[in-house]
Length: 495
Image 1 (tube, rainbow, N blue to C red):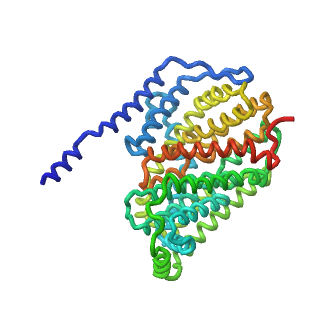
Image 2: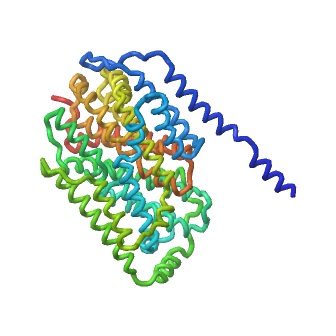
Image 3: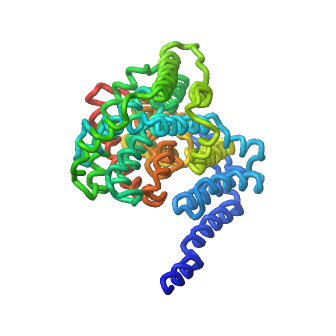
């Protein structure tokens, strides 16, 4: 009786921490939005960029959303809704623009990717793959980490990292179910899911197939520098860095999130038994595998053709991916009830991220930030300048699309570079490395949001581990810029 009364009292108690951070976000919004106009940003050519009222409003929304997301004061999808509402109420952008971003093709791509993961789980393909992997990697949790990370990284070489994360996620759920801790939060669970998100980013920088950012950056570089960098040249310089990060992140998680159990006794035999109990592969598994495999093949081929054949315009990748969603229902693999299994909180999270990203871009706030930051380094040592660009892109890609982070920083950096005797190549590649690995916020990349659905970690925990991983990333970039890439033949300084 006493314990029931205590539980009821605890349930009715006010969560002061929650309301403090809610008010902190509101305070930051109001103080920025109603502050006097801020000074212009001036680029190296002397051109002034005014931060408009709308741009200042975008920064205000950006601060409120960031605070609420990190401390999860309300469900992360609800914070995303607040992003759209604030833009409309404070006349930052009209409703038909602010809310249209919630259905941007990138958001629907994530929806389609999540549906693929749902199909893998429902048909049993996920469990079949999980048991096969565990039979190979064995019972050591360190090897389970490594096996999952290697598969994730390898897949991002041939398909978008969002689709990889959605495909791997149910596999990790099946593997974690054999850890013996139920739904309880553990270090192993945190490392498994956060690691998948980080590794998906690290692997995606290696080829143009892992994400759209590479093709966009090469396009900017070609327009500004009048030089072309090909598919295989990008992979030549990025592969050592990407795979170095994969193995360093494995070591990182073995230190900061070392599994509670060194081994899972009997896991290999249990995996063999469970795999045998699944029986032969079913008709639905075959159909699902054929649909997904065909879509991945088409996405890969169109990406290769786009990068190697000037003038080739493929259908948008979202349209191609959503064909799989339609076919899953046509062939009866999914039904209407399965739509209730979609993690709409995660879809809304990314929708809000797209809206604030476009808001910062279209109001000029992102460009104003980039110019102010990069011009601080125009008198610096060349190495400090390159690392300054890398740091800016790394921070911005956690809040806005990595394509946008590249688009606002690369043109300015390439203009400043000749004054510091720096080549465009090193700026391009250093920016692409950090743009691919947003380790701080869930909204930085779709794999981050997909991993969050595991409920193994909070946004705050993700941020704290991300701070350490981001420091590691900057160390690797510094090594690549100063030692690795020059040894591989990349020109760093102008003759």
